[in-house]
Image 1 (tube, rainbow, N blue to C red):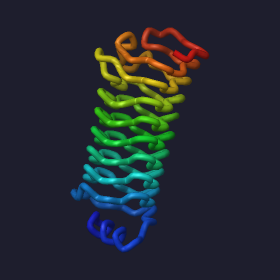
Image 2: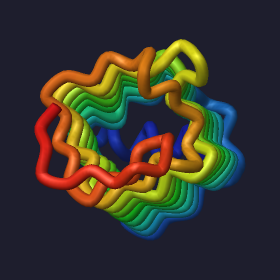
Image 3: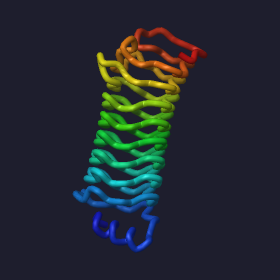
Image 4: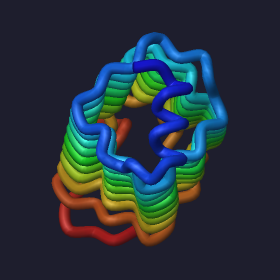
Amino acid sequence: MDAEELRRRYAAGERDFAGIKIEKSKNGRLNLIGINLSGANLRQACLSGANFSRANLSNTDLRGSNLYEANLSEANLSEANLSEANLGSSELINANFRKANLSGAVLSEAILNGADLSQSNLDGANLCEASLCDIDLTAASVKLTDFGGYDGALLTNANLTDVNLSEAILEWECSIIKGVILHNTILPNGSIISNIRK
């Protein structure tokens, strides 16, 4: 299926497109609020500026896709594969990325407030200048994840339970750390913190 057919069928009222495959789409700015694309193959699709708010994208293959400036607020992306995807400047408020693969993804300047990233793979992801308020990073893998390098990160009310930050790119002393939950958390300096709300 191509993106134009998807747009047409969505406009006609269809919402369930679970398991479909869209060939390398070059149609951005799709308005697909609440669509079900669970298990779909959207690999390397150009979906910049698309509106997928409240969509079901669980188990979806979005490897290498372009979701720059897309709206994925309140979308379900649990167990989705977004490795090497471009989510820069995207709106990801309250999105569910539980157990998602975001390795090597670009999330710079994205708004991730309230997002669930628990047990996700963020290895090598770029989170520079991303808004990370109220996010859940419980047991997430953050090896070589760039939280802003020497500029630090804004981690207000983040849950960092069972997170190993020792190999993340994060200047802890320059970061804004307020209301953060630290339990079995390994800080960038290697020290282990338990049962602290900072």
